[in-house]
Image 1 (cartoon, rainbow, N blue to C red):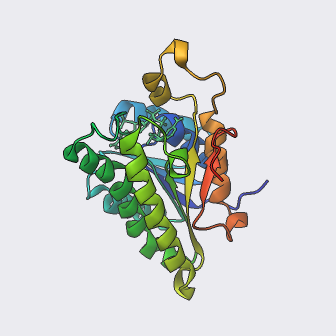
Image 2 (image 1 turned 45 degrees about the vertical axis):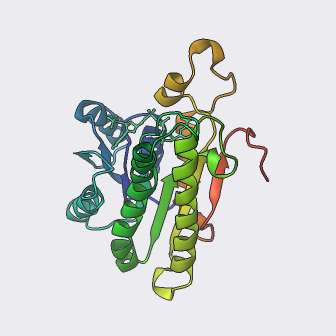
Length: 247
Ligand code: NAP
């Protein structure tokens, strides 16, 4: 299937491993040039090389995606290197586990910074360029917890439901204005996928047996970024192998 992404330009944050890497590979496979971000420069360079194997141009910006200056720097880099910005996928590391009654104010604020504000900033920073180009696909990687909170992950549950509410409202704002109607904004919500984070949260004996694949997850995001997905916006798309019971 032609996703209509060839020679377009995309930003993916937290892209060196796991779901971010899977997304970068899927967009590269679709012919999209990339600006990739993560903190560790060596791991980021390795993923960038894997993406270049698809014949696309890739530039790296090693940085902490939660730094408020990073979204603007990423958009500026895309404009300088590619002269356009069509796609932005906001991802970040997940917060530590914790019971709701145990987590501190500082931990809650840090989770909101990392898993709500950093994504909202990248969305905001990307919109002017996408408006100029008449096309935009914004996806925030969140969690199935936006549909059904996960016991013991109070920080993630709190920040990501806030992100969902913000994105839902922003998607409506974009869709109701003729100048920005061609820009969609969705959440991609993983259940359990086989990544470093899941290996850290579960030891081998209690690791669930039905795990998703990060590269398959990335291909769902690539579809949400495709030209065919023009009428999908404001959605929290579950990619969870049927694990979430909430309607
Ligand atoms: P992962 O395998 O641990 O990979 C995390 C990636 O994010 C790495 O590339 C890491 O590189 C980068 N990163 C972390 N913090 C960053 C920061 N502050 N700035 C820039 N890059 C950063 O994690 P994952 O499993 O792919 O999870 C990705 C997101 O999905 C997380 O928010 C996670 O909570 C959420 N999620 C995952 C699952 C799952 O099943 N895997 C389920 C639900 C939700 P550096 O460390 O070099 O920066």
